[in-house]
Structures are given as structure tokens and as C-alpha cells.
Length: 187
Image 1 (spheres, helix red, strand yellow):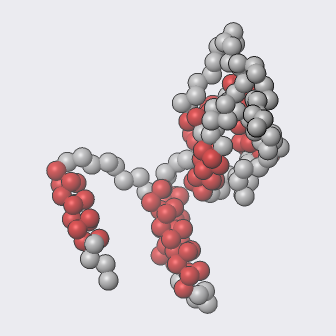
Image 2 (spheres, one colour; image 1 turned 135 degrees about the horizontal axis):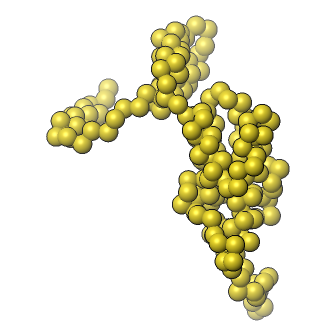
Image 3 (cartoon, helix red, strand yellow; image 1 turned 180 degrees about the vertical axis):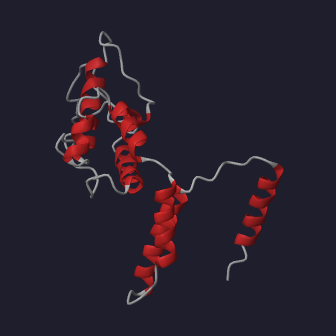
């Protein structure tokens, strides 16, 4: 029986589990999300991008857990290539005006942070608009499934926009226990 040998016997070959790995289907012209971000709906766009980047093992390039390597590092070219790919994916998922405004930032993490600072604002207007959507939604001619999907989407957006501070006091622990106990008594 013939044993297949690795395509490359080079010790610098990148493992497919490495965040530096670029697969044959990875393309800098790819758009990872279904909707190009135009300044509206940042939370949905961000969530879609996070899921896509995580699936491609590239989330570390935007969340800062994969830091830029020194130019004289042996792995610098691998880091630079993967960072450039992530930058391309981000730019392709933004409308032209927004993409042009972050085009010259050197790392995917810096682009991500800039977009985050600019568009992820839990301000009163966004909260008010989301609450208004929730208060004004009605089933109308929609079937129950469609109506429920719309309602759930608004609730999820409200949960993200409405920042609820983390509480670690004894009362919070009691509330969590109460919620878990009562959750088991669903009809």
C-alpha cells in the first residue's frame, strides 16, 4: 500500500488549524456577509462578520488576540498575508464610503476598532427607535411564524442595544436561581 506524503516537506508549511492558513477557497474578493454595511444595522452586520471570521479561524485578527508580528519575525509574511485577507473581507463587506474611510489603517484589528467606535453606540436614539419598532409591531397579515421571527429579531436587537450592567450582588444570584426554577415550569 502506497502512503501519501505531504505535498510540502518544508517545515514552514502552515497547518490548516493555524489562523495564518489561507485555503484555496479563500479569496480577497469574497464578501463574507449577505448584506453590505452602509451605516445602518451595525449590530447585525457585526454579528454576521464575527460568525464568518470565526468559521474561517480569523476572528483573532479583529479581536486583537492575534497581534501584529515584528517585521523580522520568521512568521511575519504569514501574519501579513492573513491580515491582508481579513482586511479585504472587511472592506468588501462595507459600502464604498465607509470602506474608503478605513482603507489605510494597517491592521484588521484597527479597522474593526474604528468601525466599532464609529457605529456601535448604544445611544438614546437607537434605543428609542428599537423600542418603537417593538411597540408598533403587529401580526397583521403575517402568519404566526413570520410575525414571531420579526418580533424575535427586534427583541434581540433591543437586548444588544440596551446595555444592562452586570450585577454580581447576592440579589442577582437569587434572581438567577428564581429564573432557572421558574423556567422549568413552562406550559
